[in-house]
Length: 172
Image 1 (cartoon, rainbow, N blue to C red):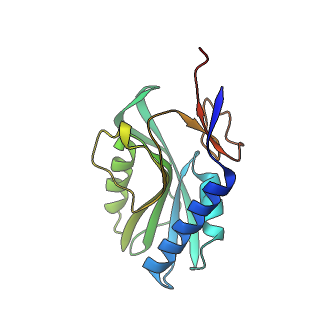
Image 2: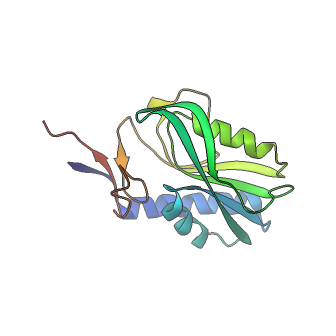
């Protein structure tokens, strides 16, 4: 059973707010957005359409090992960036900051590549599951613990197409 958490309109308002903050921070400088696949692709597409800065996009896909419910913080890059980020303003675009383990490793990996700046923009922040210190520089919405789907976020590759973000509730 799906319980609506954030509507399409609430998500849209959060995306516009994030875009405004990013524009204020970067002025007219160019930004390279690094989309973490697969969950962030819808968020990124809406976000960059709200940003007037000169922008480029690249994609990364990573795999975390461990059980399906919990990452052990071991990350394998299954699709790396196609362009250098050295000397560039880079924003990692993530659907949700959960345990923080995977994002912490990706951030460290990208910092070693010498960007001018490296920021994190997350649509959702789920602090209840945080295992390491990890903060988003730009956070759209905060949630309590719960498994969410929709707006690009999946469960077993399903529900990405939902316009709203919903919590999966177990039937009693």
